[in-house]
Length: 178
Image 1 (tube, rainbow, N blue to C red):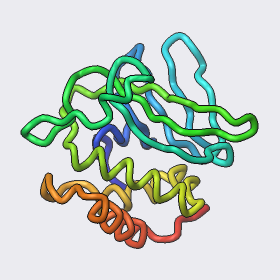
Image 2: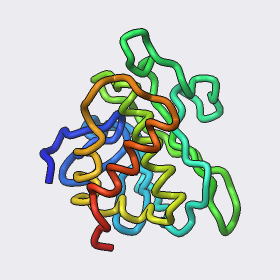
Image 3: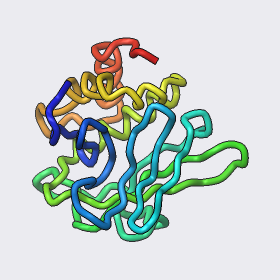
């Protein structure tokens, strides 16, 4: 397993759990990957769980203070990092009842490389398309996938290249233990 602090864009290993957003600061929002689903952590709240089976489609990440801020979906700097310092949102469509669900997360102090953020989004989408989103509940499996996706050049971020590197990461990570 990877050491705490391993990351892929906003996805980071903290305390043996993978999550999107900064889980180390008090009074922040983040999304934790658990064996039973996505858990939205919120300040002054116990948070809430979304079971893997409820997640239907439309996983995407946007950046900005508000969840409806879809214009900031692809703002990147010339250095190849995600622009801005505000938080982000992980959007998805849920079933039973059908609803759009934005999950909020706070940004880390470190910059996110554009290629890492886009690879994370491609990983989430490919797992959803294959019906294997539940694999995110295994910290060991996520560590293997992130180990394959993290690093490398901050280039080759076409849709084809993202699909290819994500498929390679899924194969390298193996079938999982769920």
